[in-house]
Length: 423
Ligand SMILES: O=C([O-])[C@@H](O)[C@@H](O)[C@H](O)[C@@H](O)C(=O)[O-]
Ligand SMILES: [Mg+2]
View 1: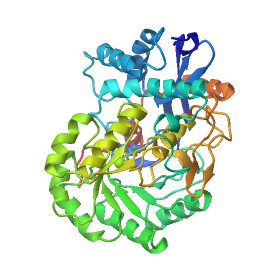
View 2 (view 1 turned 135 degrees about the vertical axis):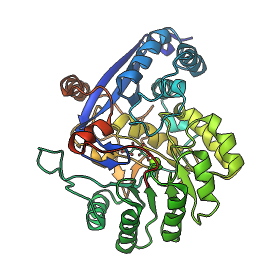
View 3 (view 1 turned 180 degrees about the horizontal axis):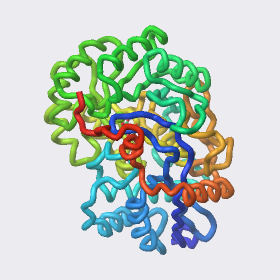
View 4 (view 1 turned 180 degrees about the vertical axis):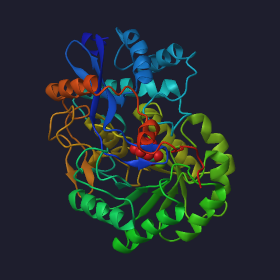
C-alpha cells in the first residue's frame, strides 16, 4: 500500500448552524441544527464526510474513528466491518438527528456513511477524478432538487421574523414557494405536512397546483395519518401529486393505503434499511424509496439500493435533513452517477444561512433548480477552516446536544403530542 493511501488520523468536529422554525409532525426545528464534520487524513491529503451531530451519534463516530488508523482508504469493506463489530451491542435507537422520525435505520450504516464518503473523496483526489467517476460515471451533469416547503412560524419566538416569514395557510405556502422558486428555479415542489388537519394540507396542495400548473407536487406528513385518512387524502389529490410520501406508519400501513391510492407511495420512514426491502416488496407497500446515503450506509450502498429498486420496479428519490455543503456535494455526486435516481432530490439547503458553511464558497453551483456536478477531483470541495471553527464555536455556545423538535415545541405549546398517526 502506498503511504499516501493509509489513514493517519480521523478528526470529528461537531458544528451548529442557524435553522428556521420549520414545523413538522413531531414539533418544530430549534434555532440551531447540529452536524458532525469528518476529516479522514492521510500523509498528503484529507477527505471529507458529514453526518448527524447528536451526542449519541458523535459518541458512536468517536468509538470507531481511532480504529481506522492504519487502514487503506480503499478498504471500505474493512471500515464497514469495524463499524459493525464496534456497534454490535449498541441497541439504542435514534440519537441521530432525525427527531424520532426515522427510528429503525441501521446504526452501523449511519456511522459508516461519513467515513466512506471521506474515503471516496480521498480516493478521487488521489486518482485525480471526481467521486461520481468512482461511482460509475455521471449520467447527468446537473442534479435537480425539489423546492422543499415547510409550514413555519415567522421567526423563532422572541426573535424578529426571518427572511421567509410565516407560512401557516395555503396563501403563505404559495408565497413561500414563489420565493424559493424565484431564487433557485426548482421544477418540483414538496410540502412537509403532518402539521395541520389533513383537509387544510389538501387545500395547500390544491393552491400550489393552481399557482404552479404542471409542476410535480408531493406531500409528506411523516406518517401522521391513519390508513383511512390517507386513503381520503389520496382520493382528494388524485392527478395532483407525483407521489404521496409516508402518509401512514409502517410497511403494513403503507401497503393498505397503496391498495387504493391512485398515485405512487414514497417513503423515508417505513423502508430505511436493507432488511425492510423483502417485506415491503412482498406487500407492495411502496413504489418510491427516498434514498439517503447518511443512513443507507454511504454512496456505494445507496447504489446497491438503487440496483435492488431497479430490479423490482421501485423508483428512487432522495431524502434530506438539515445539512451543510459536504452533504450536498455527496448527494449530488451520488445522484449524478445513479441512473434511476431520477426524481428531483430533496434538500433543506434554502433553510440554511448562506454565510454559514464549512466548505469554501463557489464549488457547488445552483443552476435551474439543480446543482452542477463538480468536476474537480474527489467531492470537488475544500474545507473552509475558518467556517468550521466558527460553526464549532457556535456548537459549543448554543448548548444543544441533540435535535429535539418536540421539547422545543412544548415550550410554546405544552400539550403538543408527537404521537403518530394523529389524524
Ligand atoms: O426537517 C424536517 O423537519 C423533516 O421532517 C425531516 O426531519 C424529515 O426527515 C424528512 O425531510 C422527510 O422527508 O421525512
Ligand atoms: Mg419524508
